[in-house]
Length: 464
Image (cartoon, rainbow, N blue to C red; front, top):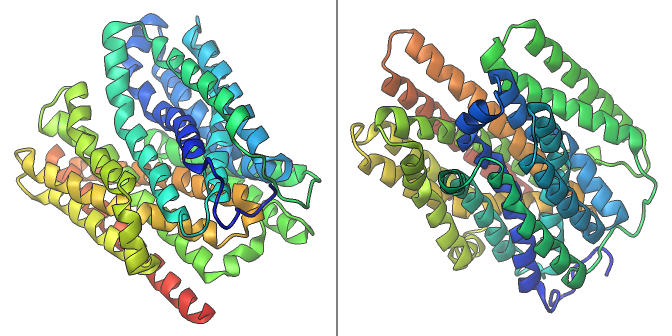
């Protein structure tokens, strides 16, 4: 099967979706699980603060830099091949990380896991788009999104549990059985799909996009620590702008480009892209502040704080796995679904910032609202991006979706973290600073929702 999904979808599509969601879960868990192990790593590997930062950043920088190239490789050479390769690399990286005897070995292993993670992030969504018929795609993407939410909430909980019972390396070694099981299942079950044309690799585009995106993400995550006007941050930001400009120029000259610049003329695509960045910006930053709010303002231990964020993920899982959010989205249409989801999410952030500041009730209400908003808006946004791109370019579409998430999340943490720092520096209490950050996040989410909904509504009118 090459390219398009069949009218009925693949006969084993739900089983295959289960396999690819398992692969996706390991990648998302790995984004958050390491944070819990920082005290153990500092003690056992004698890791300095800069080492810890590189252990976390090596994974996210490599993954974000390679997402577009990974998606393009999947389209050109086969999504099944790249999904299997991603699982193998992720498993080998996890093994090396779990047995690492020094900080340098662990950083190198995390970078290797980032390569596997980039291949998995792009191929899982691309395969889901290929094996389901168009009318079932919203539900499939909803389940895929719910697994992401589950990974976000589950990382600190699983990490905390494992560290209570085993040594720090076990947080990586638990990936191994999942990677092996996933690899066997992919080989047996997943059909091969790829773009029937364009087997010539775009090596120049791959190098430029990797350097450009990694530089951009590095500038963003370095900003809070080194200062936004420091030579390091300004220098890497300048490299990112120049290299991404060169990437856009190069892609516009090719007959079969890695990223077709003409996609950006499609209002559906630009609407979904603009909204996705602003939504992830608001959510990523606000959830970063939420973990601090639970620990430093409400006084919970890390594991208890992790448990207290669980209602958000559970709401997303229930609404997406039951198919409720997909039914709402079908009834409302994509623009209205995104707008409704954003209003719920913004309301949730306001509730956390303003309602019952001394207790958990306002936070719980906020988490339930954010969860409901995520369940409706995120799958609708991912579906809008993927639908605006030809099916044979599904890997690149998934790469764009993942790149936006990485970029928006990094920017949100950096900017809302800066709002917190400046609020505290100007004499406000830490709790007030956190509240100010949450409110800025709420405005960004609301703005993102209305920008995306407006552009998508206009695109629907034009195509009609």
